[in-house]
Length: 85
Image 1 (cartoon, rainbow, N blue to C red):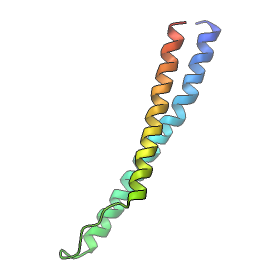
Image 2: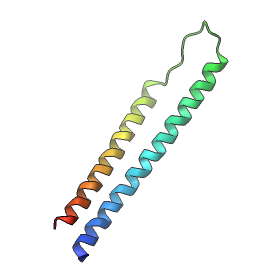
Image 3: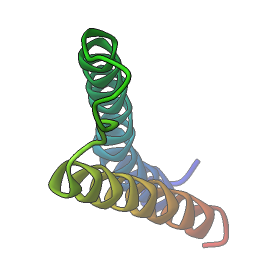
């Protein structure tokens, strides 16, 4: 593999790792939030209203997923570019 292709792949890896970490951490945070919500719901009586995640938390999860997937897509594009140079 030529040096330019190796450097481009290193750049792709540098973009992919934070994106993958962001996706992983976001999924863990979402699971913990849902587990906490389930635990709170079990303590409530039936006649009380349902609990939902607040809007800010849902928006933060959506933004983190979008940024993570954009990083992964960018890394894939960069890696594909290195094979065509």
